[in-house]
Length: 193
Ligand SMILES: Nc1ncnc2c1ncn2[C@@H]1O[C@H](COP(=O)(O)OP(=O)(O)OP(=O)(O)O)[C@@H](O)[C@H]1O
Image (cartoon, rainbow, N blue to C red; front, side):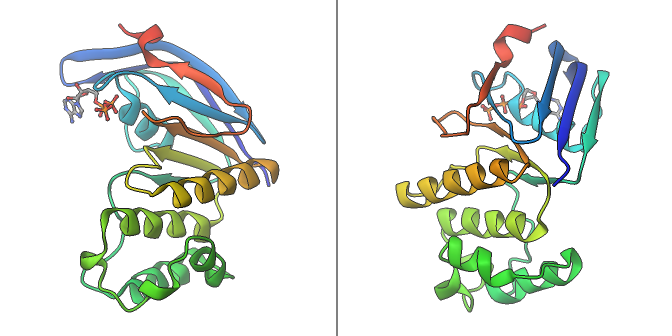
């Protein structure tokens, strides 16, 4: 797996406010970064910049390998049963082993449930299944543990460790402690403008 993500001298402006500036780091294959900071400091904005969804006010991001993003938005058709909603993306993503994610995230019993009826934690597990099915080298995770019970949290932390051990990279913005393999910590307060 080829994975690398480099941020060079990033600044972020939202509306009229410069949130942070002069942020540089390199996340090499097998490495993980935990982004921390108070509400509103710009963690979600940074994750979106790294994903290429938000243009940085200054600086540049270099990605080697495709990026998969998990945030509070559930990119699944809420009117379909979970199995059908996931299958739509499995075809597009060319997923070769969709059963793996279902088993790892214990989603099999929910395949016939409409996505809109899923609980918060079940929706988060569905979002993580989509991430696994895409097989992306770069994982960008915005509060990935939100809504997960402790068993699911531990299971996902194990999946992150496996992903990094296989040469992937993971960058997680999280208020709660998250077990990442030897994480570098980025405290966005240190880059506040
Ligand atoms: N589209 C936008 N236009 C203007 N300001 C925005 C926009 N989106 C976000 N902001 C502001 O940017 C700041 C950073 O938001 P962001 O969601 O990145 O913070 P965060 O660190 O992830 O916060 P939290 O811990 O609450 O999730 C906030 O003050 C927010 O109001």
